[in-house]
Amino acid sequence: MLKRFWPWFWFLVGAVYFLVPLYATFDFSLRARRGELSFAAYANVLNDIRFVESFWFSLQTALATIAISALVIVPTAYWVQLRLPRLRPVIEFFTLLPFVVPAVVLVFSLARTYSRTPLTDSREGLWVLLIGSYVILSFPYMYRAVDTGLRSINIHDLTEAAQSLGAGWFTILARVIFPNVYVALLSGAFITFAIVMGEFTIAALLAQPAFGPYMNRLASSRVYEPSALAIISFALTWAAIAAIQWIGQGSQARVAGPR
Amino acid sequence: MAFLEIVGVRKSFGATVAVENFDLTVERGEFVSFLGPSGCGKTTTLRMVAGFEKPTAGRIVIDSVDVTDMPPNRRNIGMVFQSYALFPNMTVADNIGFGLKIARRPANEIRARVEELLRIIHMPEFGRRYPYQLSGGQQQRVALARALAIQPKLLLLDEPLSALDAKIRASLRQEIREIQRQLGITTIYVTHDQEEAMALSDRIVVMSRGRIEQIGTPFEVYNFPATRFVASFVGTLNLIQATVVDAAIGLLTVEGQPVRVASSLQSHRSGDAVSLAIRPELITLDGQVHREVNRLSGTVEDVTFLGSIVRVQVRFAAHRLHFDLFNNPQLRPPQPGSSITVQFAPEACLVLGEEASPAQSLSASAARAA
Image (cartoon, rainbow over all chains, first blue to last red; front, side, top):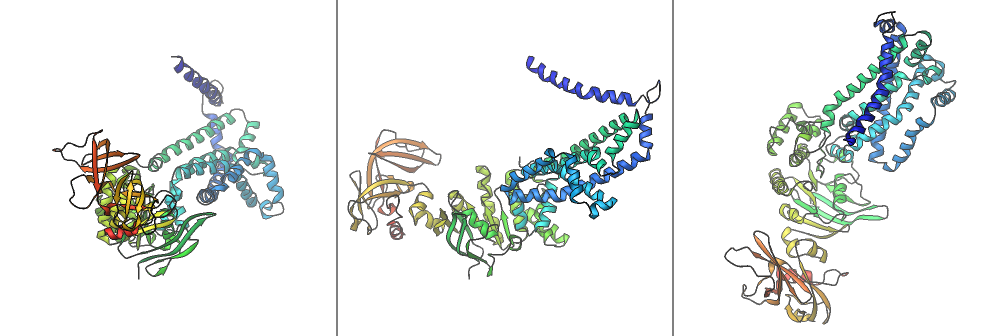
């Protein structure tokens, strides 16, 4: 009996710790109008052109980050596993660096390194620098997700099978490796998505009109709207996780192997 | 000119030599197996033929084209892997048609070829399934069809049946051989299973420690092993310590009992210790053969019923010897503890040198027996 009690007890403690603040935020976001519960704060947020612009900006940045990360990291992780397994500890060490180097240090280093280049002279250049920073930030999540995905399939034999059937490296990557690490890539991609959508430090220091700085500005100037925005952010993140689960179902079964 | 020529091939990984002095010619349509224990270099050799490993020395010629430096995707070689290596994201039909798509063949040709191969592997209704929906045996048949789809010059199979259970292995083995004969495709098959190699092959290449020990038909390799390794690795063998009494006439003694071999022991002298190798099926009960025979008397130690045969273990002095009797419900098998005399012909005896040395009179004995 006690064996069952304690797991449930700790589960409930965790759930309360997580859900109570969330419920409080949601409840607070509904009280924009005195004496009644309404979605007025949500309407205000969604009608604000700066919300749409910053959200759209961050969405594009997130998608660009994911695309570049995928194009860089999948071939890298694949090649390391296939031909350079001794380099794995080195790469894994690099994946830890974004956790160790603070975002402030990272952005000042990048800004200093690329000062007086097109990357810091124009708005487009700064956007590229922002994406570059996010690729570095997302590196641990993307690399580890892809690496785990690659380990779940026999890339050596799949590569050699494709080669024996006449496929070159590009075909192998595009038609054999990418589709089979799709789910892993997707999970890394959505973590990247969540990070980019909420990132504040780098975007603010590079003076980019991103969603993170917008949320921060809103929090300092409005009362109920920041809570509504927080709930919207949660909803988007959960929608992303649900999408991973839904899209990944078929693919996970396919790579499950022989019965 | 042979269809496949492997000339003086050597492969080393750092200081470790995986394959050395490998010379082999394979005729068009021939089925050749590389047989040997783990680590003997058979898979490395196969991978060099496929192009996945580059020989450190030597050359590989397929159909008069030197492919030694050619990348694997340009060799037109079909390969079947132990792990099946089917693409999990593709259906069975897509897997089989993959090589043809790479070769940019027309869609209707691909469809027709895929259907033909699905028929050949007896899986016409499985085209739309994914690999995870198939059993191991079915997956391997698809892998075979995929390798054959591109109409390769050479088919390479790397222990394709190792991951399957015994019953499926036996039936798939037969299927592979039938398909190979039907298509007449030159095939190299890697296995550590001697029974598999003997059942499938036109010729067997027995390997040990990166070297070829013997090349021959299954009959030759089993009956006339060229080296001590082949004798002990292929089939079951009784090894008995003996002493040379008269090398000129091939007379030995085993625990005081005389044994005659078919050839003279030119490289031995009287008093030399040798090993006497005898296949269990060449030993019979006393009185069953009416010609010059060797006889050894001992005590029945154990009797094992194996269905169609009964394996009898006889002890005489410090030696144990196994022999097989066909099961006959009308005859009572020997009983443990009873005295027994077994016999074998001088031609059944292979004389092996001491442990470290190569086979001595093995070839001579074999040739005479032949």
